[in-house]
Length: 212
Image 1 (cartoon, helix red, strand yellow):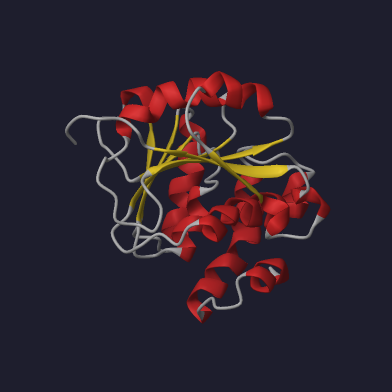
Image 2 (cartoon, helix red, strand yellow):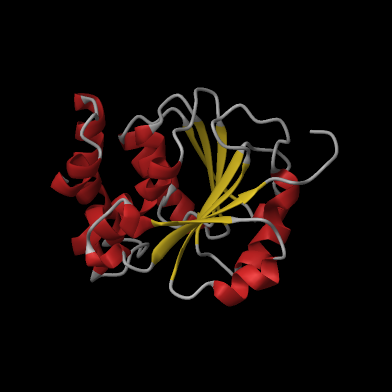
């Protein structure tokens, strides 16, 4: 938990309490339904929570922002972001029902009224969102195809609506295959731990046309 306060020193006491609860909640649920690898549960705050919060270093979601977390798994990046941005609305989706069961239980325990979790594929969701976030569920060109028509055209945040994709390693081939304008944010600019040395956020601005 100290690593979260190190990089986010302005958290309220309520937010600190919510973050502190995550270790026990994920530990308990992970013993029943494996949503995080056994070795990673010990590094939950660095490898999952802080990694998710890299997005909060790139953008501060304004009140009323709608965010879709695709392939959320156990609730990442959606749950940590929902704690940081309580005035934004988060929809967390995954195709695997038992993972959504964990997400709903944790959101309920934390009293995250700004979180809705559903078992559904991204292609089948009918709503539209200001931002779509995810942690490397597939290649970027495939992901873009899944979600590019689900983004609201009109923006009101400090960066234009679009996709914020957490990805590690060599991404050059994927970016070439994407054939879209993008920006890359290296997470080692914000976090000094070795884990973040190759971790990045890919931001793809919404360029679709048509009515929302």
